[in-house]
Amino acid sequence: MTAPEIRVLLVDDQELVRSGLRRILRRKDGFVIVAECADGSEVPDAVAQHAPDVVLMDLRMKRVDGISATRELQAGDRPPPVLILTTFDDDELLSGSLRAGAAGFLLKDSPAEELIRAVRTVADGGACLDPAVTGRVLTTYRTAARSTNGAGRSLDELTTRELDVLALIGRGYSNSEIGRELGISGVTVKSHIGHIFVKLDLRDRAAAIVYAFDHGVVTPGQA
Image 1 (cartoon, one colour):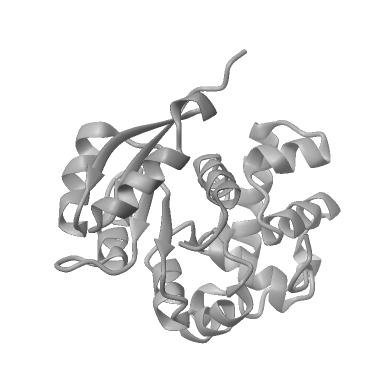
Image 2 (cartoon, one colour):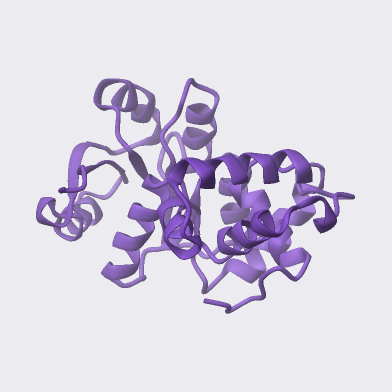
């Protein structure tokens, strides 16, 4: 059975960048570019009209930046996941994108294969943090988001299986990858993740990744 195509909305103020992304995210590889935006101000209407599975968002744009556009999307009903794509490895900006609700970030000099994997991961409900800057960005993120970082909640609250799932979340696995790794269904994966979020008082997947690093469930550089 052929997997459904992943519908992608491209948001970048440079046509040359969008053209390059179109060449990477090809239909034959399971992607379809449903629309393009040159500024964050165009994103809400484009999402409403085209219902993308993933929004690939530039960080810096002239009128409405990627963080503001992401925050506005997250305030709506059932927003698509946002993957930030940027040339800037500014820790505060990247951690700000996580606080705004982005599912992750990738630097624009990443290999095409990494971009393809990242888009598939966030479309599948996962999070993707560029390993080149993850450690620094998480340090900045946890400083600004202690109230949503599971502070005071113990790993002892988790079952063995939930701990396994948390470890894979911390390593950047998508829901389907977690299911394959542990031999469980997608529905069961989602159920475990929901329990983890409640038990550890975590807001989202980014907070779960921070918690996993902070508590030694995963370590920097672990694949």
